Length: 107
Length: 121
Image 1 (cartoon, each protein chain N blue to C red):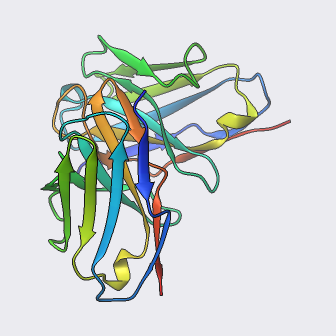
Image 2 (cartoon, rainbow over the protein chains, first blue to last red):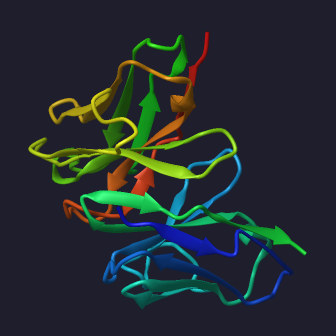
């Protein structure tokens, strides 16, 4: 099974900050990586698919990069609506594994 | 509007059974793989099961294999999760989710609101 490791687990940042979250796969997953945002009491929301493709309707301050085993989600200028938990997910084979999540908190 | 409505959760005793449903609307249901993802209280997301658009392939997480069965009725635009031999560790919010682009292995672009399953005596 592929393991997905996110870092950091928690991140404190201020509005306007540039934020980067990292996700590492235990083996190569090519570009088959997605990023989700989840707010308390709500279902996850797809932000990025195929490592760097922005889902329709998602603000352009969100971007993804990487391939193989190393991936990043970047928020260029953190907005009040962005305080949430973020998950990466691999979908390289007939198995779907999520990272453990990164909670972005207000500094 | 593309929408998923999941239902069927509740309180069940250990060893019991429950069937979840996910009603889809706003897209051609049979063209997309569908999945179940769960989230235990205060924990992260865990993939549970996925079924292809034509039902010719089903996949399960090891934690539920042999106890849960995923199925779909494309004539009713509905997916199901039959959960048997339930354990306390199955307690979670269960979300249904739609495959993004029609690939068999895909990200999840639309999610239901979630239905809570509590396994307790």
